[in-house]
Image (cartoon, rainbow, N blue to C red):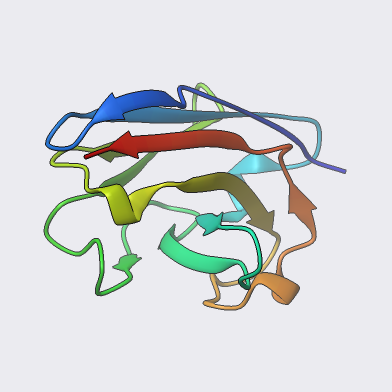
Amino acid sequence: QVQLVESGGGLVQAGGSLRLSCAASGGTFRQCAMAWFRQVPGKERELVARISWSGGSTYYADSVKGRFTISRDNAKHKVALQMPSLKPEDTAAYYCAARGAPSSDYADRYAYWGQGTQVTVSS
C-alpha cells in the first residue's frame, strides 16, 4: 500500500505559478511510476504529466507541455509539479497517482491516489 498526500493548491491569477507536492508513505515508492491527473466536474480525469520510477522519463499532456514540470525525489519520497504561466483552463482538482509498473496515460491503471488538491486560476 502506498499513501499519497497532495499539497500546494490554491487560488492564483492567470499568469501566476503554483507548485504542487505529493508526499508518499508506505509501499515501495522507488519502484512506482508517478503521475499527476486533473479533473473538472462533469469531465473524466485527465493525465497532466507522468514520470518513471527513476525520473529518467517524463511525459506531458499537450495542454501543459512546455509550461509544467514534473519531478521526483526518491530519497524524500516526493513528487512535484511545477506550474508556471497558469491559465484559467488549468482550473481543476489535481490528483497524485502511483502504480508499481511502468507509467501509463490511463487513470484506471493507477492503484494509488491522493485525496486531491484544488487549483483555481482566475482571469
